[in-house]
Amino acid sequence: MGMTQRWPAGVEARPVEEAHAAAWAELLAAKEKADQNGEHYDADDLVEELRDPKLDAARDTIGLWADGQMVGYGAVRGRDAVVDVDRVMIEGAVHPEWRGRGIGRALVGWLTERGTALHEERWPGHDAEANIWVNSTNAPARDLLTGLGFEECRYFSDMTRPFDEPLPEPPVPDGLRLVAFDPAYDEALRLAHNEVFLDHWGSTPRDAETWRTWYTGARAFRGDLSYLVLDGDEIVAYVLGYEYVADTEATGVRDLYVGQVGTRRSYRGRGLAAATLARVMYEARRAGYAQASLGVDAANPTGALGLYERLGFHATRNFITYRLPLTEA
Image 1 (cartoon, one colour):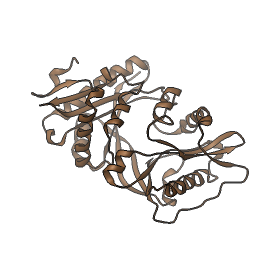
Image 2: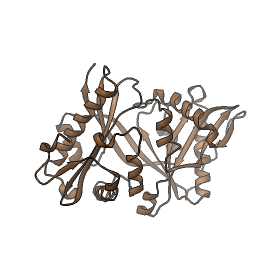
Image 3: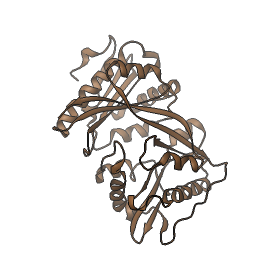
Image 4: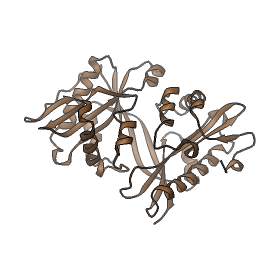
C-alpha cells in the first residue's frame, strides 16, 4: 500500500476485504471488551460497511495482521458535500494485546495521510480537517491524539431510556398527523432531513445513494418503529429507529437505537420531537424492546439534550471528537 515501512516488525498491512469480516469482528470484540464503547459488530455488519458504494475499500481501509490475526484496522470516509469545512472521518483500532508497540501512532499517520489525499480528490480548494472520536475514559487514546497534534472540538453523550419506567404521552398539536414510516415518503424524508440538519455541527446533505445505504436502506433500519409528523402532505418532524442485532446478542438487552430526530425550523418549539419520540418508544416497548438509546451533541442547537432528559433518558458514556487540520484553502 506504499506505506509498509510505517509498521512495526512482524506487522503486515493490506486493505480490508469481505473475507476478513470474521477476523475484523473478533478484533472489534476485543476492543469493546477493553474500551467499553457500547458497540458490537458481527461479520454481516462489517460486510455492509465494506459494501458502502462511497467507500473505496482498496484505498480507504487498512487491515494490520500478525501471525494470521487482525491486530488493527483503519478506515477513512469522505463526505457527500462540504458546508463549511471538509471533515474527513477517520477511525481505527489496535487489538489490546498489541498496544504499546507503536502501531496506533503509525495507524493515525496512515489515516491522516490517506485523509488528506481523499480530500484533495473530492473537495480541493476547501479547508479540511480529520475528525476522530474516542471514549472520554480512554486516556491512552486521548494522549496519543493530542501528542500528534489533534485537539478536542466537540462533545457527545450516549443516552439510554429504560422502558420499565412509565412512558410520557405528549400530544401532537392540532392540525398535524403522526404516521408510521412508509417507503412512499422516503425521498421527501431525505430532503426534509437535509434541511433540518443544516444547522447541526458536522452535518452535510445526504445524497440518495448515501441515504439508501445508511439510513432507510440499512440492515438495522426498523420502518415500523419510525414515525413522521405531517402537516398536510409535508413532513415536518420525524424519528427513525434502528436495531443492531449484535448489540442484543452481546448484552442480552433488546435496544431500539434512535438514529435521527428532526424537526423543521419553523415547527420547532411545539413539542413535535417529544410526541414523536414518545410514540416510537411506546411502539418499541409493545414490540418487546427493553429500552431506547441515542447519541446527542452536547452543544446541539435545538436543545436536544434537555429534551431527552425530560423524556427520561440518562447519559451512559461520553465521547470526544478530536480534529486535526489537513489543509487550508
